[in-house]
Length: 278
Image (cartoon, rainbow, N blue to C red; front, side, top):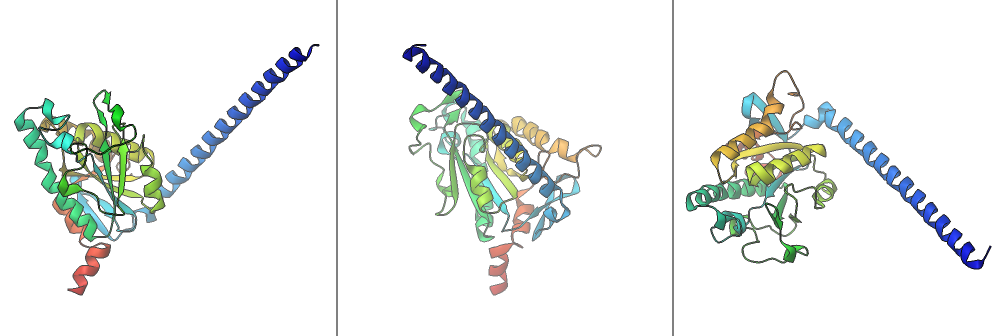
């Protein structure tokens, strides 16, 4: 055999060996991820997973457990792009629709203040996806006035901020990793749009065994019927008595009003300590 033949055979053998090693690595990674998901499912099913500092009163006489140590507030896409007629998405809708959506801002701000008083983990998402369009200039996110969060919902130092190009806040970010580092197991979910990024985030969260509670009146959509349909899709499977109603916040989420969430958070962590010292 010639030298070139030997070299060719060696290259083919090397490529084959590399492909085999890659397949083995991928299969091992998939196995480890499956095992991790099984462990999370087992942990989520334990009765002690529902022990908490307080219980939020939810729709259909249900409750959602919250603690400052393991519950996070996740706010979705409170950006000028959506909440203003000057925004990239808002400019495509009529004034009444944008004003209806913008009315959500005050309740989201109140929820954010309550979570901060309780000393909870807070996470914010920003989206550079608009329907079928992804902003190419934000592949490495560059903040501009309409992309940024509205002033009442700006993050404080230490709060999580993720920039996403998928509708859900988990699939294209490291949100899961950041929440797990802080010991988070449960999520209060709010923001916009209920029927798009809120819905997608709720599903992605429970797929990762985070329990979810949607703060219904701190969410919004460009149409009230779209909002209501999304709430029903999130809460319907959870509350059907013949089905998964015992899986609190995991199929796909409990639903509560802002006032009931505020009442529960006042009993948690920093908020409780502040009250006792006054």
